[in-house]
Length: 226
Ligand SMILES: [Zn+2]
Image 1 (cartoon, rainbow, N blue to C red):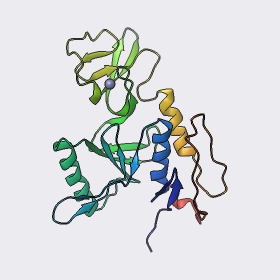
Image 2 (cartoon, protein in one colour):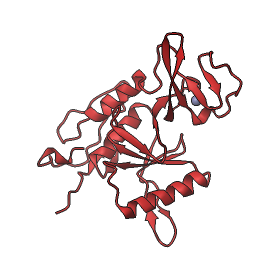
Image 3 (cartoon, rainbow, N blue to C red):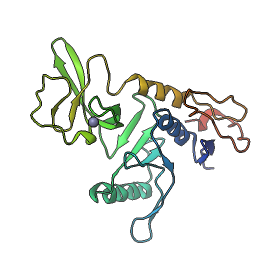
């Protein structure tokens, strides 16, 4: 017997799993545009790979996995695609492992990265967590923003903001990784209900108009609800 994730209809897409749909809810609530399974790639020798998400504004490909227990066959595909994309200057690729919630997911191929809001350019993207910097008796988060590559290397560390190329420091009173926008998006993503008959959650922006094309069978138990 093999365990098959439940196909989930949301936002006009038919996701292969609840977990993927939850990540879609997360992206939607942050206004991050995505395409789902938009393009497959021939990785060489007839090996095909179809990434889960493409985020056009961030030029980022994303694969979603429920656990780090990834088959050898898949691992080879993911590594090949990572090499082609990242090393070929085609954009960025990473694997998000786990549910869209604070402290509950890992980022493969982009270690120590989490979704963050850059205090300088305000972009929301995966940002490398660089720990904290002490400012008097307070500590501020430090992160690496790929979009702030152009920052002046000589900006003083004592000034809130940038202190060397690409490294940004949280503004006092605002978190990079646990900014309210992000915590709201995590909450929406993990609490979204997709079962037929559930009342869709609404938002000011109309982002949560769930599209249910046909009744979706309720799972027989909760094992499948990642
Ligand atoms: Zn930035």
